[in-house]
Length: 131
Image (cartoon, rainbow, N blue to C red):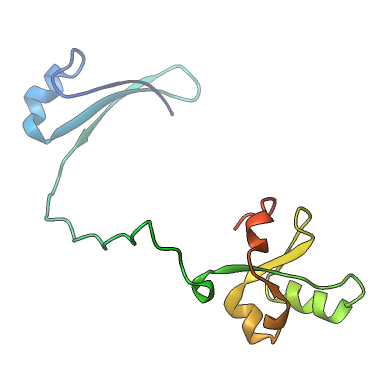
């Protein structure tokens, strides 16, 4: 259903629901049915509240992650090395046309003994592969 209009508590169009639900009211929404013959009124109310869990502290932005902590790496494998290409595909590697390299998870690359083929910094050029 498509939302036509949303009203905050106290706005015109939400006053009767504000009178009914009081401070529990968050929003009133008017929705149109897919067949466009009916308009529905929905209310969003607070049914419970609790203290939030403390958030984890974010990492400082001025420190770069260590090389071993990076999750994705670029791996160079020659075109004629079919066994290695099949191995990198098997562990979930994806080909990057921009960098002409395979992109894979660092842990998986190290487990398959391909860590000597990792090209540090090349992952930044692999913009065509979703990471």
